Length: 393
Image (cartoon, rainbow, N blue to C red; front, side, top):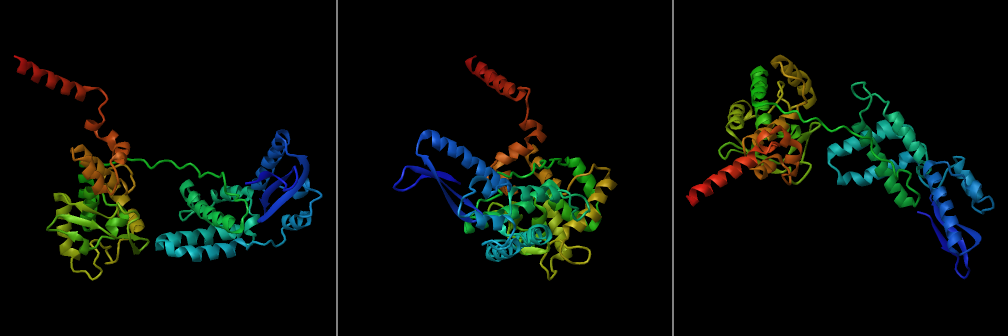
């Protein structure tokens, strides 16, 4: 951020800011007074806005500066003293990959290769402006994704996150103004919470292909995430103790650890889930892969394929409205809450740190937790008053 400073051994003020990776100190003959500082501060603010927008021209403000020739060459697009975007992005990726899970590294690599490099590859990284970034985001939102539909706001945000991380590091390393500052993510609609009723769960399980009945029974009655149940291995299932240890996940065909510490947990099995796992043990208990659930080809579950071939056709067959597979997790949470289980126990089952999310997300689906007619409070008062009256008599 630029500043207004006073020259050593003098009472004259000067501008001190960074542009295109270089420190700029432009002297003035203005004396150090409140009025002059205010005037120069307004000018400094305008300069920084123009730098961020990519419209700043050094000549417009400092036509007699000794730095003018240097910046005019840079402004005309001649090579600067910072690397090209593609080179810095590659270097940054190689440095950061050791900190990431394999699936996240694959996502970042895809973002750079498919989206960022085609747009920014040959541009000096310190020459990228805020206007460039906003234009890129606008174009990105019009690109077709895997389904030939436009990229969703969530997907656009993920690509922009990679760009932001690269520019943050480059701006810090080469000391230029980060053009990403002030750019906010696109608004993403919250995922709709639409759990199944117990009756709907049973309709689904009656309609699903028998080979996948145990799989979906465990999903509905434990609340495991897709990656958790797809990566579940028999070594983490204790049928005698009625427990599942969540220790690994299957993401894009690769085994990883769960995303958070809280996600690594023990899940108690109710009778429905336990019976399903006992049935499944007869089928895959001695399979060399160690996976609890397998595809019809004997390989690990491919959740995209399963969603398309089994999940949605089963909903249609059972006469149930369309929902995403993640609703099995929401269903487990609401059923446990509706049954009156301790919210802290439910939070641990789901892998949450506190009960806050349970009540914020699910309470409206559980009538006995969300009454707004005062009847529960009234019953408590009547009960206590009646009891006291009997004791007085």
